[in-house]
Length: 167
Image 1 (cartoon, rainbow, N blue to C red):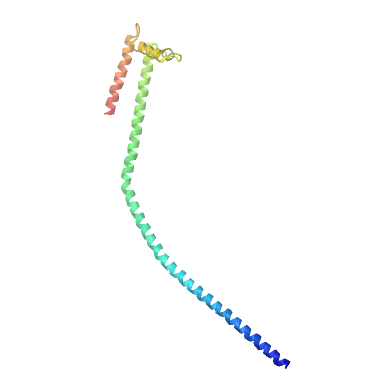
Image 2: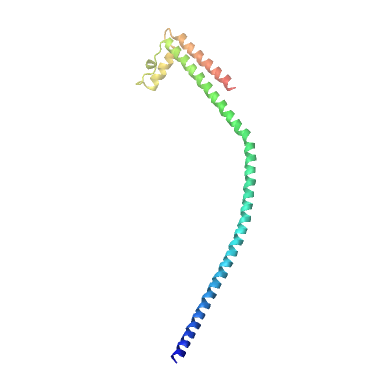
């Protein structure tokens, strides 16, 4: 009888074990089916993305070709801008040299006449006094009228040169 009860307990335990094992295997089967389904969805998404990536690469290639074409069209404009910059630089240099020469001639004329810059425009004088002193230096006092006229000739020559240069 003890052996019969033991065999019955063993049979019941084996049956319970088989039932739990079946439940575990069914759960594993469901997990594997869901995993398979997820992998199929991922594969489909990758295939779709691959097609889209190829389209983007083709589109980017077309854009690159278009940009290169437009850059080739802009090259002459950029060369013109470069040349214009060089010309403006040369004009600025020429104007600077002309003004420097004119200032040097003015200083030489001022020194010949005997006008000292500190005497002509003292720092403590008012604007009215400086204007009067400038007028006196230009149109002169006794013996300075010819030098003042020489300075005016230089100013006239400079104005004519400037007008010709502008045209």
